[in-house]
Length: 431
Image (cartoon, rainbow, N blue to C red; front, top):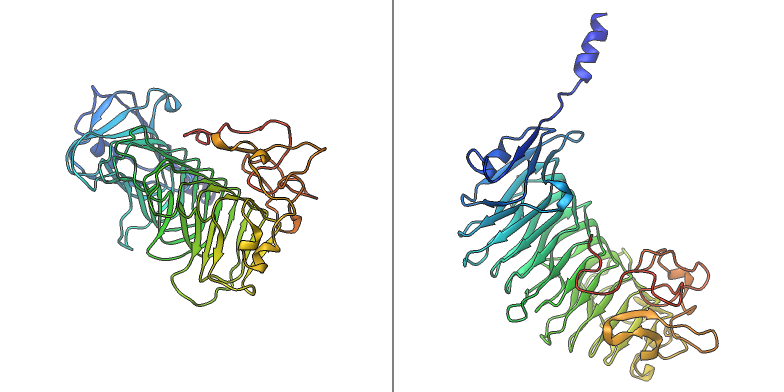
């Protein structure tokens, strides 16, 4: 009987506490309340404004089964505003096993290099694990970064928005493993001071999914690798749009293996997609570039210093070229549709093109970024039924299952006469 009693006592866990806070009942500061949370606690922040003037660090240490949760009330309706106006970051968070969701972070000061939500640090001692950041909106960062996450494992960043960073950057990620970055949005409503970069990927980003994110109208690159290569990256279903004519590449990824699929890239007179490594040695991990739709006035795809690259089932609607610093033995082209002149390409690239030339009328309305295919059984189309099933992705840009015999070339799978998925806009893939 004693043994049984001890087992019961050891298996029981103390439930956490729900703590409600409003702008009128914050005893000291919101960050102090956060630091006092224990495993299983939920801090429920009611709508209103909260001045985050101290810049204190917040350390949250929950458990796997009882994470600490900081959330706005009512599932994101009337989200609370955490406001800072000094030279400190709005919120610095450390620790593991926690969730932050349904809040706004607003910066109203003039200091540069301020971060909205800073998670972890560049110290290898500050490892953050098993965390979720959801439905957090950051705005007003002057030459800073909306959200920066460093030294993390099993980090989920989902449904967040970075808006109007005034020449600052959207997201910065560094040294992440086994993580998910999905349904996030970087955009601007201020054409005078647009955002600079959208998503910065610092080294190393390993075994991480980057899916269904939107980068809309940044001045500089939408997705940019910095400081070194990422490994086993799955980069799929993202939308990158830029109207500026800066010289930076719209998506520039340094990789040691990964999948680049179902993305739509619209850019001006600059390279749309660059896949590279800064070194010249060969990698055994394959890089697959499949089912992407690219529309620009310059180079569609640039591959540098890479080996074992498969380029298949892509729609290259470009005035420029496809180029690679590799020879035929290291890059393989299959069933890509191209709007340019195939004679301008090396033979090993041109032999991997569809029989039909890609034209404006192949899409619903390319001028409005509607790249869903138009198909009439009585006329030919460079996209529909033109793909190579051996190199096909299972799902398309709309997360619809692809044809398992003859898939559509490009990001969309043709299923109906109208697009069954999202209407393209600045925030169409966010929750």
